[in-house]
Picture 1 (spheres, rainbow, N blue to C red):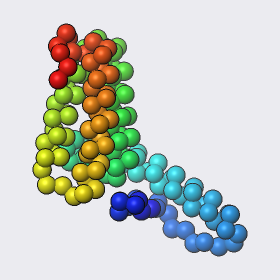
Picture 2 (picture 1 turned 90 degrees about the vertical axis):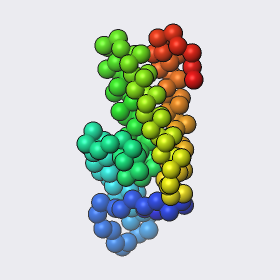
Picture 3 (picture 1 turned 60 degrees about the vertical axis):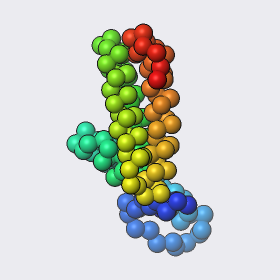
Length: 141
């Protein structure tokens, strides 16, 4: 699969168009879903193993956004149970600072687009945590 920006995601299996167009296009759609599922699973397994600043540039854009949101959700859920929202807020600030440093560096056009989209989402995620008391009374940056 190729995006308009030039990003590609390989299919997890080879397809050959045969028979009715409606049938093989349904197969293409199935393989697209299966391929995305496989790459997201692989990326989620990789996330704890690789520095985050490398991880965000290693995977396709939508996989990065889905993966970061998955881990953010897990962190927020865990933190709410433990009652340590201010600690999570500080971690989110650190992660955002790392992304900003990456954006200020040398990147491909595609890498810059992915990081720009991710930063917007993560600023919102930071603000959600801050609104729920994660700042410990600090003013928003």
